[in-house]
Amino acid sequence: MSVSYWLDKGLAKTATGDRKTCDIAIVGAGIAGLSVAYWLKKEDPSLKIAILEKNLVGSGATGRNAGFITCGSVEHFSRLCERWGEATALEMWRFSEINLELLRNEIIEEDSTLEFDPKGTFSLASTEPEFTELKHTAKLMQKLDIAVEMLDVHAITERLGVANFVGGIKYLKDASINPMKLVDKMTQKVRAYENCEVFENTEVYDIEQTPGGTTVIKTSQFEIESQVAVLALNGYSASFKKYFADKIYPTRGQIMVTEPVPKIMEGPCYANFVLDYFRQLADGRVLIGGFRQLEKATEVGYSDHTTDVIQSALYEFLQTHIPVLRDKKVTHRWAGVMGFSFDGQPLVGAMPDQPQVYFVGGFTGHGLGLAFHSGKALVDLMFDRSIPSFISAKRI
Image (cartoon, rainbow, N blue to C red; front, side, top):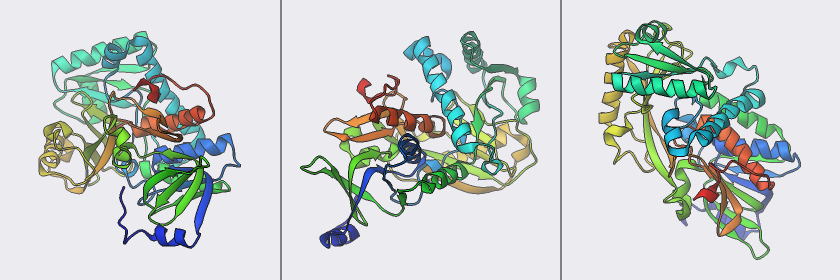
């Protein structure tokens, strides 16, 4: 979030009086920023909105994730209950269920090109203690009327083509999707509105407040004056505003994808207490990510490079647990920067020193499962409606 004097094309343009204007400027064109724009236009189609993106739409975590649309958060539901209490944990779960429902009704619709699969996800245990915790989680969820299924070793072997697991559970209302096809469709919907522009390759490096109370957003291409600004930067929040330094932490995640194999998996899977994850894609390729715990101290910051330690662990996992993938070729390796919040829940609010600057982020690796509904919540906040306390920045 920095631009040198020599590269500041906006400086020269502003000197000639070329300043753009809008009602609301959104910084970040990932799923969060596009969600806010979508819900703002649903609220008031007359709003003039500008979406500003440093690179290309979806080039951050949105285009680098695994495509899981999961309910809950980064931890098993039983651990959510231990930390937050059953009532709040259930509210968190329902919030993410509504997120998926909203995505299906508003964006996905009946579009088969998005590779949307609503068949649920699995959480697998490779040890008996982990399976015991999963069974406890499932019973707790069933008590609270959350759709879940318990599976023994024979069921997961037959339905997932995996080996060396002792059992698992299935979250029946989860889904998966091609994340870039999803965000491309969101972009099309947003751009279809009048007075809603997306500016790619436009890096924002400062926001100032004018004496009249509006904001001036300085970018590498131009300056834009708006009544309200929204920061939808997730993992990059702290690089733009120090306010987020102890609230949203940039955390790297790594992924690899294999060559295609015949269809073996009923749905996406988590393993190792949700730290690792894998799924089979529509074209037969298998994607796997995780193992951040092996280099936790260094898997931070804003670089999207891969490391030998984690990439080797991902490959060995496939060799150990998915027999059909033994000795198959790896075709893609990449990393992305996620935004982990201080307590694992999203942050929705306004800057204390700039109340006309709102923000949404901190999805803790579950952006597809939380961002669309969180964007709606931010719009609710902007229009003086209440939002859930567990995502409100007032909890800080």
